Image 1 (tube, rainbow, N blue to C red):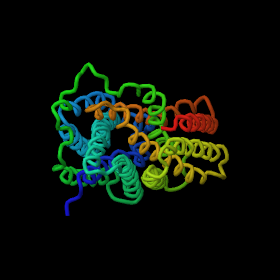
Image 2: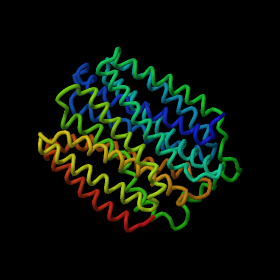
Image 3: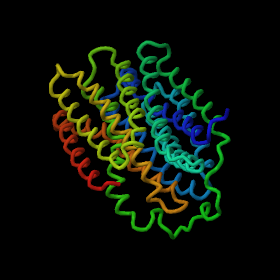
Image 4: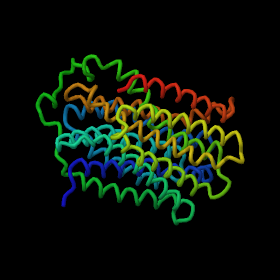
Length: 381
């Protein structure tokens, strides 16, 4: 029996997401092979976000004018091509950065417009679970990729080749699964929106900028801190590649497990997400300050992952309420623009750690998240 359109799109989102974190546990191998510094490693993790800038600025308006399919399917193929290009970049640091940039561009377009397409497809079928499905499949994919890459990177053959080939093959299968999903932007008005009309519903700009956007940054800032910051700045004493991959899988897997709770938590999802970040950063700060408590970084990373998953589910559920008719693609792209700012967190941590103790930095982030939790609780949206 053919899966419903929104579930098929969920599989596609999972396939693209699985590739985005494959390089994460392999950073330690790249460091040895190319003699990269810690700053270069965290920059490689973050350059992915730079690829989002052109992708998000173009994908949203294009999807609102010409439809979701025309954007999502080709850019999913770009993500598959990026995985194949990683195989050729194993001996060149500049080429590695270029391919990581391309990976960000493809994934950013798929996530922003694909999730809007999924939410609209679910709505057509009378289901309100579209936002949760998108959050679960994306965070689930984020978890699968680094676990697979970490295990192969530590103990398998061709550690800088095989993970990417496996992903490209899997992603092409998911594209085939989603190929026949119907377009959801069908009305002439929606396909040719009035360019003089803003993308937000009247009266919602303040909510979008002061309530939705700040928590959007946490979507990726939380797990990126755990996945891209902890292994480099704190380190693991044994099997670092495998442990980095497993930590990434646990962190992002918790996001996938936590995202469905949005259905029960409702308006409380946002403050609970920020609270997870506050506790997660506080525990990570403790692990960094007290070496015998290093293992505390593991439950802390899981809390950060759960917070990111809840923040994503909360944000996606809010977008239809603030987007003007026919402009969900543009609003979704803008939302992901804020979300992907969080990918800069490991780079910021690496930069400021040269001047401020890492534990102090993480403790400061815990305080910021506690204040955000209070602000989100007052908003009650």
